[in-house]
Image (cartoon, rainbow, N blue to C red; front, side, top):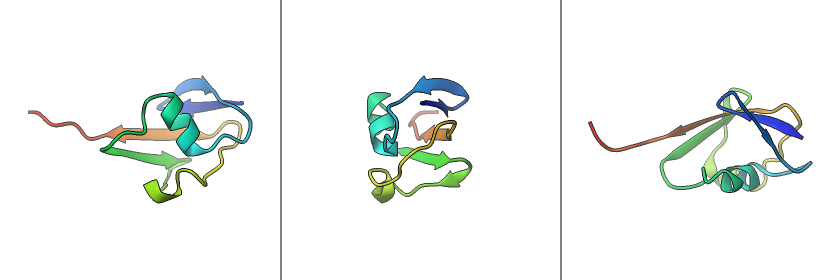
Length: 66
């Protein structure tokens, strides 16, 4: 299936969890917040949240610096 992470198309296995997709893209580290189809998903729910074809993920990573 095709999902979109920050407007970039990414292929994922059918029925993949949000955690699976984020880990495959190295986006599952600390300081990351994710919204699926414009709804924030708490980190505790990433493993249980299944994605559908065409899902749109917005990934925000906090960074230090100035």
